[in-house]
Image (cartoon, rainbow, N blue to C red):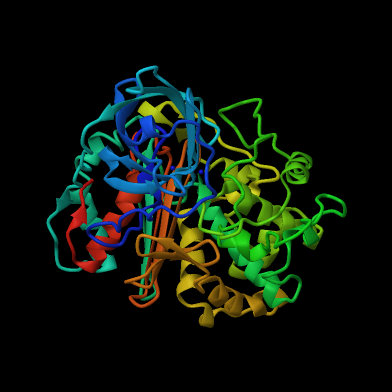
Amino acid sequence: MRAALFLAVATFVACGSATPPPAPAPKPVAPAPVAKPEPLTGIWLGALKAGSAELRVQIRLDFATTPTSCVLDSLDQGAMGVPCTNVVASATEVSLEVPLVKGVFKAAIASDATTLNGTWSQAGRPELPLVLARQATALEAKKPSFDPALPAVDVEKLEVVLDEDLKKALTVQLAPKTGVGVTIGVVEHGVRKIFSYGDVKPDSVFEIGSITKTFTGLALAQMVEQKKVKLEEPVRALLPEGTVTAPASGSEVTLLDLAAQRSGLPRLPDNMKPADVTNPYADYDAKALYVFLANHGVATIDKPVFGYSNLGVGLLGQALADRAGTTYEALVHKQILAPLGMRDTVVKLTPALAKRFVAGHAAGNAPQRAWDFQALAGAGAIRSTAADMLTYLEAQLHPDKLTGKTAEAKTLPAAIAASHEVRGDVGGGMHIALNWFQIDDKGAYWHNGATGGFSSYAYFDPAKDYAVIVLFNRSIDDGTFADDLGKHVVQRLSGVAATSL
């Protein structure tokens, strides 16, 4: 819920520095069954194509290691060494998953073992053909370009600087009369600025995609502070009685495992069969989720490692709502939105907000319908405005300044602080808190999101006392513009060379 086409590896590369940290190193996974691995060991290169857009993909496989070593390089995005898992090969077929971008590659092996004729699928999108050919040597990533550094820009002067920096983008990504635009919100030392470019307004409503996951993590922290749940409590205990049985032996998935994304659950459930692929989560309800869990079980893997999972965080949101006896939207409203006064943040649009909800767009500015959620709402269902998201990010910067008389308002400061505590290693100079990613050398936090027609980027730095939100009504099919712009803004505030737009 992420540049070109559907791969979007760059979505999960940390921002906030002139050069992003490398993608996480491959993590151990259970040994994969292999019939004749030797012919597949090597470097494989191909390209995803959709219309005139093309994205080169390089996969490096080594079946001589245990477990199999597998990394994916998105050459045109500059994202290298993204770990692959669940590598399964026979004499005629191979498949693998890329959890970081929720992708799956499946291919038939040519008889001479020089090509892999396959397909790439991602996040409920239609499959794209992907043919990989064996290469003698690996290619290097396309080097990102940067605009020259300027002295650190004050938030009051940022819009003037961005007017200049975005001149080219205003003829491409933000071209007039396309319906596409971006709203940027920045707060620095308590001074807030919101401005828009293209065909949107400062108060427009957008889908925020996977930034929703940080709300789910905070809802968990709130309920822990209120002693309604425990971090180490099995998720099974929150679900309707009889939903899933306890593992016969060993440990089982806890709420913390879900929030730290180390549950071992797949990126999406295998019984997710959307009737409308342009709205892939709309008909996946709690009944379907519970059927999946009953079949899959809740046992943890022997050595849990980070693995990005919409299923896992969606399950967390549903489980918390089950414990509270309410819906995910009502839970988030009571625990977070009402205490913070976020009146323009919802799952289901009110008639008033629907008038300000902008249309989403996919590749080539093609109109894209909004996404609806049921059981997996905690993974990506929230819609919001830049102003409301700045309120949310200001609360992350200064939880100690929050006041309120309700029970939820009183526990919120401690819950926010707890949601920032590091819970696991992601790799590439990052750790994960309760769904917020922390950049180790900066102490800053970030998350991004994408749905079928929207993309977003959120960042806050407690030490420097500023936060940034970028809301864009086009998805990541034509590039990670929201991410790039978010990084650019942070870099301008910091006085370093800025990612070129």
